[in-house]
Length: 171
Image 1 (cartoon, rainbow, N blue to C red):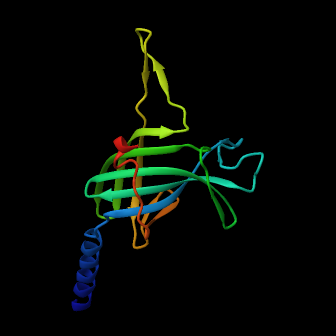
Image 2 (tube, rainbow, N blue to C red):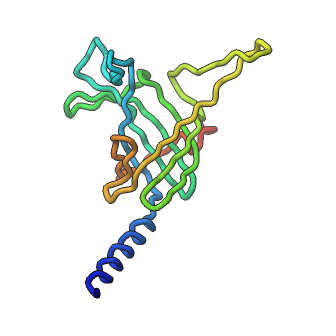
Image 3 (cartoon, rainbow, N blue to C red):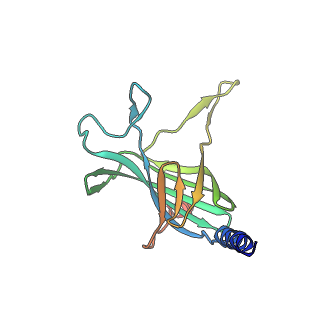
């Protein structure tokens, strides 16, 4: 009986300690850039002109309390060679909120603006046009290695990064 109680206590204190992890900080992860879809619906993240090079957004995510900032910078990778794009793939800047429960995190983001990207415009019933507000929701699992969103691990960044999305009026 003592062993069972000891195991339950150890499990619960570990669970509580893990759920109280401070996740504030800057995280970096990759998100595929889909240039199109294959016949079976898979994301095609390479171009016909250079199929070995895979395209991603290098996502820089800052979590500060219940606030989140996400800057997406386009990169292409071939083996261990990373090229930072100056326009292809577009640059996206989001701001939003964070909700955390135990080992789960939900980040609700709204697009502030983007560079080198198209904007979605809808025609209203009165014939005028209105820009569509784009949103993104990231649902992840907090682990000892970082945060897993989908199939991507976002690790805590070791370098300083100046977020455009944190101060968009400056840019």
